[in-house]
Image (cartoon, rainbow, N blue to C red; front, side, top):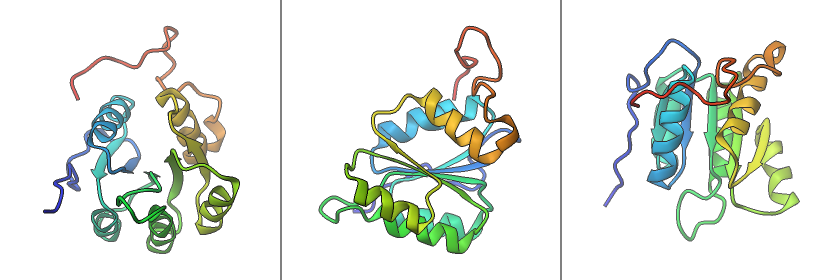
Length: 158
């Protein structure tokens, strides 16, 4: 039975960059969707590679955050998603966020077009900083929470 996703081209709120998050863990998707929406990103989510590919074909994303293991028992099948995304949208910025270990896997991900490779667990503030740096190199030092001095993003219902 196919898993339902929260993917919808109109699901993301805001006027910021368009972001696609792909992970097979629903709790990770929910947390990341809420976090990045509060930072102003327009966010869509997918749990499966095929869902992500369909969205990439129809929506002009600025960035993709993807896990490498999307299907149990198939290894790092997210590597194929990276190359698919870069072919479909050459300008897209790709961040890999995965628990997969190994320098070889990271090298392959970068060969496929990943701009950043982060290992789980990673603080969402750090992921946001990396993403911001990729999208706007001139603001790479900017705080991902919009400059709040207390280090917390605005608390709103996502």
